[in-house]
Length: 430
Image (cartoon, rainbow, N blue to C red):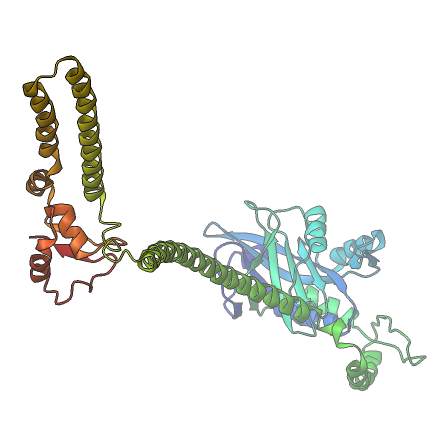
C-alpha cells in the first residue's frame, strides 16, 4: 500500500523558490517543522542531521520524497565543523529501524547560524566523502537569517550546485510524528549565569507539557541575552555577502580607472606628436627670422628676400660667376700668348685677332635673359607654396628671370601689398 502511494505525486503542496530542471524535492511538513525546531534550539551552535525518504522517477525525472530527519546526536566538532561520530552513526541506524524502516538516507542537513546558505569547502568535501550517491542532497539552514536551501552534486562540473526551489507537501507521516513525540527538545534550568545548555529527551507527555511553559520563558530570557552577544557571530553570512559586494565594486572601479588612464595616455601621446611638429615649425621660423634680422643689420636690404628664393636663382648666379671667371681666364691667357708671339712675330693682324676672340666668347654666356626665358617656358608651375624667406620679387626672378612679374603675380592672387605673404601660403603664377 505504501509503495502504491509513492507512485503518485502529492497534491496538497506549497512551492518554495523556483523549480528548475533536475532533481525535484518534496519535503514533508513534519520534517520541515522539526528542522526549524532543531535549529531554533541550536542558538549560535552548528548542528548536523540526516534526511531519510524515498527516490522515485516521474517522467524521467528523479523525485525525492523526504519524510524523515534524525538528529546528529553525539556529533563532534572537527576543524570548526560538526561531523557525525561513530556513536552518531549507531544512533541514526537505531532510529531508522524504529521509525523509518522502509526509507533510505537521501542526504543530510547542516544548521549554521549566521552563515546564511553559504557553502564552504569543508561542507563540499564532507558531502563527497560520506554521501556518494548522485541524488544525495544537502539542506543548509540558518535560523538567525531565516535562510535555507538545497544543494546536489554536479555530475559535469563537480562539486555541489544549488537547487533553486522545492515543495513542502502535507501527508500522514506516522513515523516522523512518533519520532517528534519521543524526541522533543527541552532544556534544564540554567545552573550558572554562563552555563551552556545540553539537550535532553523525554517520553512522558505530562513532563513535556510542563516543560513547554518553561521553555517559552527561557527563550524570552535568551532573546534578551542574545542582544548582548557579539553581532559578528550571528552575522557572519551577511559579512561574507558584504565582502563579496565590496570586492565586486572595487573590481568594477579598477576597470573604469584603467580605461580612463588608457584614454588619457593615448591623448597625451597624440598631443606630444602635435607639440613636436609645432616646435619644428617654430624652430624653422626662428631660423628664417634670425637670418632676416642679420641681413638687415648688415645693410643688404635688397638681398633679404632673395636669399632664399630657390635653387634656380642660386644656379643662375653660380653660372654667372663661372662665366665671369672663364672670361677673365680667357682674356688673361691670350694676352700672354700674344705678348710672346709679338716678341717673335710682330705682326698687327695676329695681335688684333687675339684680342678680339676672348671678347666674343665672353659675351655669349654673360646675358642672363636667354636661359631665363628658356626656364620660364619649361619650369614655371601653375601654383607655388610660399617657403621661409620667400618674397614676390624673388619668386619672379626664380621663375621668370626678372622682377617685373611682381605686379602680375599680385593681380593674379588679389594682393594689394607685395609683403603680405606668409609661410605655407599657396599662390597662383601667371
